[in-house]
Image (cartoon, rainbow, N blue to C red):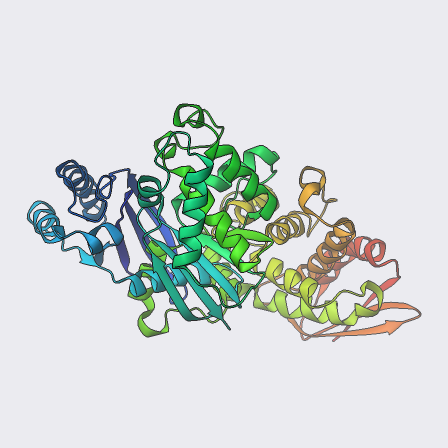
Length: 498
């Protein structure tokens, strides 16, 4: 399979230097093929002045390592972006020149607006956000973005990242109540929220680390952090717990990266305050942010915002696993016909139809792993792949549908904590519809010219029309007939018209 460009992005942040290497799969999708991260702490001890010699040395070491990794992929382009630490340092030029001399790469210092837009791109192209806010807590800066109709309409930046907020406001270990009040007051003084909106998405390593702690505390059934919703009360409790313990005790917190133990309380407090200001009942984690946004800018230029996140991620996941996404469209069309023809019996709406059609496009992705266990592998890839724009509940439902499309009864017990009461029935019906659609399109190319669906004697009648013998399709459909009857609780009949 031919792939497109390889883009390497190096994010020179106040806390860490991070590398992301991405390979273009299509005009609307890429896959991550390598990552690297160093806690260089370039901004540590900077306050409002120069980068320290120690910070520069750590940063240059990290730059040497990540540039070597990036070079090994023969990247079409390597983007090196500096953020808050380099924006505010009078001696930033010295670091940039030293980095160029040692690696041959030029660090471009992003403005606060450029950084916010790249973080926004990473979030908007990987989530279902349409109207609300995006928050990014880095090592040096805090960015808050107002999103309207999937467009960035306003961004704000303040030097309230985890390192700077810790050094300036949380001066005691553990922080005192006065320290915490001072940081919360600084957030309210430097960030203005004009619209209290329920939708809030967050990006950045500190948030992902907090999400990991929450996931373990909940004993959450999914390992995915992308899409995890941290409730308001959970963030408030987490901020309180982390701020009330000394750094040495925080290092023992299950799920916490020990290298962040000294600065994680500041990140939690800032995020908690932003949740309070926006009125968001939950903070949704986006696994993509600044680096992915810079990749999108390189790959798509002015049209960096994807028109349809779900469709783009499905096609990308299919292509990454050696599947031609367009080959599934005949099944998708029949699945849509079956859904509409049986609406009077299942009474589902647009969300269920979208799940069915998405499952139809994803059903074949397990084929290249193991034909005989393709349904099980398809479910695994739905859970573990870069599938964006779906909630965790929808991910579980999609996985169950593709797993049980041709046979079997889905077992949702392990994930019942994130499912709704009727989801078992929902999956059973949608899986039966998908199984019938796949049976009708048993062969490729399909000899079935058209499918006529009608109500007959209180049930569903399926008439296949084609020029050739349709024995294979009828045999496959008859194997699915009882499942369809059981799921819809109606009689189903099948006929052929030459």
